Image (tube, rainbow, N blue to C red):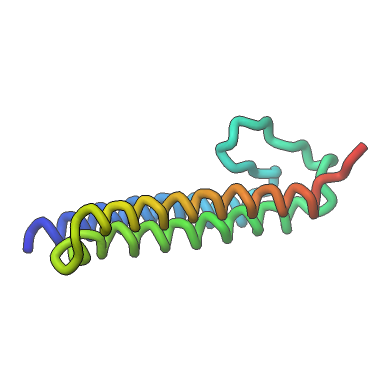
Length: 116
C-alpha cells in the first residue's frame, strides 16, 4: 500500500510541475516557447502574444494533468493486466501526449507567427 501512496504523491508532484509551468506561461508577458530547442520569438514576430502564451499554457496544464493521472494509476493497472502490455500502453499514451504538444505548438506557430 505504501508503494501506491508514494507513486501517487510523486506522480502528482510531476503533474503539478507541468501545471505550474502552464499557468506561468498563460500569464507571461513575453512570448513563451516549448522546449524544442528553437529560439523564443520576439513580440513583434507574433500577431497575438497573449493568445500564443495561453495556447501553450493550456497545453501544458492538460499535459500535466494527464501525466499525473497516467503515472498515478499505472501501478494499479499492473495488478490487473500483463506488465508488458501495461508498460507499452503507458509509453504509447505518453508519447502521444508529447506528439500532441508538438502538434499544438506547430498549430500555434501557423496561427500567430507573422511571416516577413
